[in-house]
Structures are given as C-alpha cells and as structure tokens.
Amino acid sequence: MYQILAKSIITAQNGINIYRGATDSCIVSKVRAKGARIENPDEMGIKMDAPALISQELRKKRNRGIIYTGLSDPYNALEKEYEIMRKCLKAIARFDFGIDITTRDPLVLRDKDVLMDIASHTKCVLRVMLPTLDKEKYSLIEGREKNIQDILDILEGFKGTGVDLILDIFPMLPYINADISSLEELLKLGKEYGVKAIDTHDFKTVLQSGMKEYFYQELEKRDKNIYDLYVKEGLKDSFLVDKSGEMGRLYMGFCRENGILFGSKDIQSYARKYENRTEGVQLSLFDLT
Image (cartoon, rainbow, N blue to C red; front, top):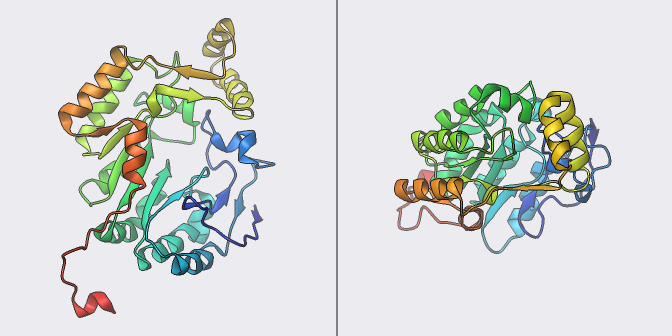
C-alpha cells in the first residue's frame, strides 16, 4: 500500500478515484489498461485526504451534480480499514450532491444509512457487477475469492430503499457467459430485485492494451480448455454479441415489458443527471440544523 498525495479529488466530469490499483481479480480489469496510467496495478494506492478535498471542492461548486466512482472499486480491504469512502459519502450528502457507485463488494452495505440519506434528497445510483449466476463461470470471470451470494446480498439489502439499483452484466464473454440462457436468468433476477436498469454495455467487451495481456494470461491459468478455444479463433481485442439477434431482442423486449431502463447510453444519461427529490417538500427546523 502507498499513499497518494493529491491536490484535487474531483475531475472536470465529477469523477472520483479514492483508490488506485486492482481491488479484485476480475479477468477483464480496466484498471490494467495502459490508458489508466497505473504503473503497478497490483499495488494499492490510497488518498487519505480525499474527504477533506471533496468537502473543499464541493463547497466551491456552483451547481449540484452527480459524483461517480472511477476505475478502482471504492469498496475493498483498505476501505474496510480506513473508511475513506464512507467519509466522502457523508461530505457528498452534506452538500446535497448525488452519487453513482460501481462495486462488486458487499462492504457497500455498511454505508446503507448514508446512501439512503443521499437517495432521499437526490439521485443515488448503485451499479452492481454480476456477469453470470453460474458459480463456476463466475469464479472464472471474477476470481475464486468472489461469491455470487455477496452480490445477491447487496441487491437484497438495497431493494426498496430508494437507491437506484443497476444490474451491470459485464463482461460478456464467448464460451463463458455470452449465451441466451445466462442472460435470461439475469434479466429475471433484475426484475425480482426491482432494479432501475440492466446494462449489458451494448453486448460489447473491449480489451485495451494491458487488459488484453492480463485477460489471456489469466484465462489460460483459470481454464485451459476455454483458452484453447480463444487461441483457435485468434486472440481478439474485443467481443461483440449481435444486438439485433436473439439475445438483443430478449434484452430489449424484457426490459420494455417490465419498465426497466436499458441501453448503455440511456442508463448513463439517467445516472449522471442531477435530480432534486426534496423540491416542494416543506423542511422542518430539524432539517435545517
């Protein structure tokens, strides 16, 4: 672990990266892309002064908006010890900004109270990564230390709380989880937990430089048979499911029928648009203190 001395914490697009480095063993890791400019992804960095920086920067902003988490999952072993994200969330709530979090870790349940507080005032979006419900395939994609039940616990814990849940089906990979039966199971799961949106990332997985090397190295270690199938077809940089085919029609039809937001562009637009949920609500003296 190393400390990052930062002069600022919020990007021009309202993104924050409290931690730097790979916080999980997902086989498709954007943290490992060369464009992420992280010299050693396996070493975790932490911005200890992030809460103070966020408070300073939010105080100066003229317009409220949605803050979103970056490449590294803000819920990880360091967060469990230092609670930097929790302190940042409290600052975000205090200044009446919204939050858009992407996570794979049940530690987010610890902050349910703060997230519900944010959701009562403005938009609070929680993106939960779940590529498959098959345990072996999940371990192949996410690593042996990850557990599907942890993801289900997050969905159950935030169901009906006012927090907008997004079921993030990513990555979608040939010979592993890019099939109609897997997609159908996940769509039904999303409906069961009352998610706001289901994102398939337009059925596309892109392996940038750095990501590609890690992906194929890990795939060969985790499942040599599937790796050999990839080798036979050529080690591609990206995988794309035909959106106009059976899987695309199932996805769009199911979401339309059940009032679930779909399509990465529309989901992104919704998640990043500020919403005042207290407009027209009379505040008491207790709310103003």
